[in-house]
Image (tube, rainbow, N blue to C red):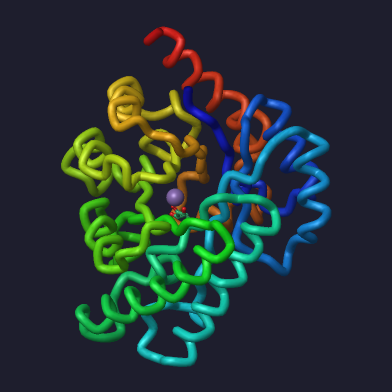
Length: 278
Ligand code: LER
Ligand code: MN
């Protein structure tokens, strides 16, 4: 019923074939790749995906201080739009149906630079232009809320739904990330139900962002809610070390369990739950 993907952002400096081979080897249908078009040779990625028999599920955009859709600096907003378009091209070249295009700002930017109404307008303008471009290439944009310690811009699915509505394009949907949701949502299951057919992608992790089964999230009702809304997107595992800067942990050589061990455990755990449910 559900298709599984694994977000390769945690495989820090792995060569692309190692990422793809690992994810395919543990039975995933898809792989999510970081939105760094310069870091990949798209022909090579296409060839490796075919060789290992998996698909590109999605691309995760990576905004920075130089590319931020809601910056007060018009040049930085323009850089961000050009960047999102380049990620959309990457997606179309490797056959990924979804680009994660929000919360539109870099990680851990926790305060706005301009009045909130104005930032909202910039986000709508930028994402609408990105969506119209993405539509010409058959790509959808997903709006992802993050927890309050990583962004001020979108924290809950209701806000992402309002932004989607303001953009008003059929190829824009929302997504959840169970780690962020367990911090911010009144009810994870309720938020999934309210998103309904607009939920086009999902990041899956346990409460502590480790492999499902290693925290205190109750996955059975979440899977049930996804069934109820007839969820058709991927369950994309996005796991990161338990630190304010998880990538610093990885760069220092930590988080080795996030490679083979957690990649294997995550899909096994969710598949086991689904089997027991029948
Ligand atoms: C990105 O999908 C996300 O959820 C961030 O918290 C991780 O960098
Ligand atoms: Mn996420």
